[in-house]
Amino acid sequence: MLQNRMKMLVFLLALVTAAVWPSNVAKADSLSDIPDRSEEEINYLMNQGVLSGYPDGTFKPHKEVTREEAATLIARALKLDGTQRNTVFSDVSRYSYASGYIQSSYEQGAISGYPDGTYKPKETMTRGQMAVSVSNAFSLGSGSNGSYGDVSPYAYYYDAVKSVTSAGVAAGYPDGTYRPESAITREEFALFVARALNEQFRVSTDIDSYGERVVTADILNVRSGPSTGYSIVGKLSEGTTVQVHKDLGDWLKISYGSLNGYVHEDYTTTSHSSSSHIIAIDAGHGDGDGGAAANGLVEKEVNLDVAQRVQKYLVDSGIQVVMTRDDDTFVELEDRVDYAVRRNADTFVSIHSNSFYMESANGIETYYSSASLDDRARKSKQLATYIQNRLVPALDLADRGVKDVPYHVISETPLPSALVELGFLTNDTDASRLGSDYWRERAAEAIAQGIQDYYNWVD
Image (cartoon, rainbow, N blue to C red; front, side, top):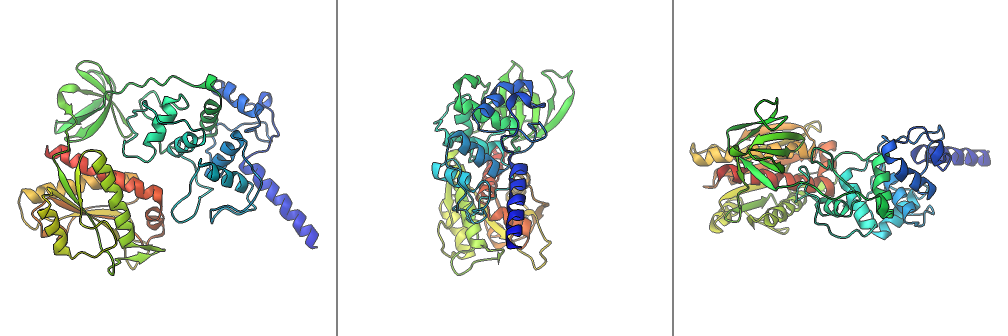
């Protein structure tokens, strides 16, 4: 009986392995759905034994690739040891078909996990993550090209995207985007790896980019072509920073997130230098005051980690930053405000994480205070709005809005100020974001971008 059960277990494991990453059951010339545009690269990898087709005679080029599949393909391309074994990641079983490949890729420096010790093998791999893995795995070095409209210079994958682009391993889309948050498909993955392995497959690295411009009109129409005769495809508000890809005289080809089109140059200006600005970043709570705690997270730690990441983004962009705390110490509320004023800060942003007794409560909200009906209150609301508008799509969490609440650090201050609640530690979905290194980085980048949007508006 025991032998029969073991045989059945082995059989089921084999089925799962084949379904996740097919064995070499179909040769390159026998697959029915390999796209013509990538046929040569895919056939090359199949003939090298790096990847293969499915038992039904297909390649499934549009199927999304998981993180365990990505590690497997990279390890095979590098001819690393795929022997099943224990890994450094708590959520990768030694019995997983990918365990050996994941461990070898980790030891090679091609992949990394999350701060909680997990790898999340079943999550899909994004194009940004893939750029990091391929750049590291194949030692592509630094790059000079790679200025895409949707790749922020503050993103963790920025250098990697420049690297794979300069090496000719990756290319963006015709609209000037790279789409770093999109899941990568088997076809795209194959192209990345084939180009990394064989230089004859590499592509041109020329990318049109003319830097950034700031919208000066109250509302600026974005059109589908370079004249007022073309249809309106979107609108931009004053102070918005856009990426310029082509200068067509009076018209500019631009992108802003997923919005792509043309705007008239007269309603934009060059990006403002932020070096004259000083902002106070306040990580809420500290030391004996831990704030909220749930799902294995402590608010003071989340707040400080994100605040320090925000600091790096802002400093890299030329904005001076003063931190009310940069370690696990406690600072009284009034002392946080006084410190910011004494250090000549012109703006104040406090970072917190939310909690509630009902686990269903979720989402992001940003506060300002209109305690004094003056210009400071108007600017505070605008600051909070810019941050909220950046943070919600970056974390893909519910939008709880911008709210007027007289919290001490934003009401008892002469500075334009906002208080950010990143999400609810007591909600499983929000907590999974706030416990992730990847999502904390996205949160920090979004907050920094919101602050820059505000400074562009003020200036």
